[in-house]
Length: 200
Ligand SMILES: [Mn+2]
Image (tube, rainbow, N blue to C red; front, side, top):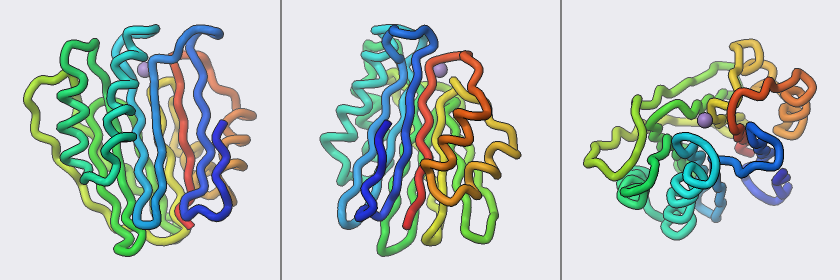
């Protein structure tokens, strides 16, 4: 569990769980905040176990090293890094604080949902497929966001109903939202990664 620092612009609550207890999780994620931006990646390696983990962690390495680049460039670099791996599905987004703009790109079934303070929920759609080094063109979506927006990024180890999404996005903070999810119960369907954040 990572708990966000109150001094940061984005308060995060993240958790992961393996499908089989004690086994390696095929999902990987990273978050990074600088004075100018916040960036977040969730990758789910195809299949399970070490080979899945190997694929998803390659994407994380790229974004950890090159997080100052734009989302489109990073998606291309992740794709190249995934050549000769199992492949992975990826969701990557970056919020630019001063502009209050968000760049988003998703390939495959990692969901991203963001709310505005007025309660409106935005569910940007990802492209189907996965990354494994084949040439691809990445469509990056640009969204405006407002302060106090909450978001959820989650792999297919969780299925959220629309009332779950509302409960999470209306929670006072990400830690309370995570508690809600844990209390509601999370059936063990796959490796799981869930990141809930609030942009202050
Ligand atoms: Mn999965």
